[in-house]
Image (tube, rainbow over all chains, first blue to last red; front, side, top):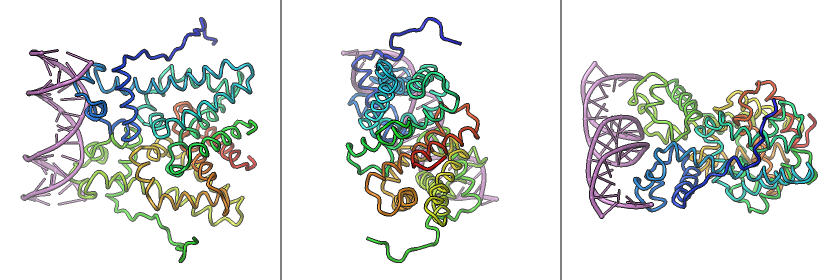
Length: 195
Length: 195
DNA sequence: GTCTATAGACCGATAGAC
DNA sequence: GTCTATCGGTCTATAGAC
């Protein structure tokens, strides 16, 4: 059952050219505003200020852009998990993970969470090994080594609560700092950490 | 500040013909699978087994279908809030609301939550009075009458946690009953209710 | 309420010049 | 790496018969 030959190098470190980064940044921005299905290559090209053909020079299909954008978001989460894993105690690791996820959600607001809940992305990640690995590492940090299947729900709920609350219309008018403190407080209560 | 002339009749009771109900049911199903932007009127028509023109006879634009589908989902949430409001004590009201939201999320799984997080729907609800009313009533049931602005985040987080966790790939393989118990337990902990 | 047929715009994707 | 130009297909939406 244990994975042989544990690889400690980063599994999600997408190497992007400057042009590719521009495409993915524009794509994530538009996905957050119009959804994946509601975003066309023409819209991405216009956002960057080039033509469709220039975009096609970087990625051969729209699907490639969608998956690369999703992996870019995943790599940000993976980085937070990796930092948390370096903490000396489990208490500090959990705290670092929660704080990192809250900061990411605040920084992106509309941008994140949208791509994590888009049906196209959900279906992709549902059978994606890298995503499953990151989620399992997150679960281990939060719940410990010997955790039952019910901790899957708890991990998913924490992620959904943080990223989902940040994009919720009901908190649209709230200040970033107020939002951050409340997200941190409730996330810690979900994990029974002191606030 | 208090609302004069309190109306006890249901504010969100969409009166639908059988044909309209068929359109919205098919639309919600497809929105959950492909997103709002990724769903065409042709797909909706094919799902029902009629032509596009027949669909256009019920709703004049795609936007009308999207908004009617969103209101249908909102009316389901409103009904849960209304039932909770009839409970004799606040403790029972909170319990009924949480249980109702969990049951709704379980029943829909992919179907719900998707439409609540779609960027198009989020933008619509962000400036929608009926949505704001339902959310404020929900907040009052959960947090009490005299609640500060920070309770907006708590309410949004609870909704996001329940609906978001249900559609998360990380719980895709889980049994409905296990999912329900875990969702109930964590939701109650977020509200400091006994499990 | 459903159909066929169609209009006009936009879609993803490609070819080839610079 | 970016452009112009274009392909075939699908999109929303409408007109008009049954």
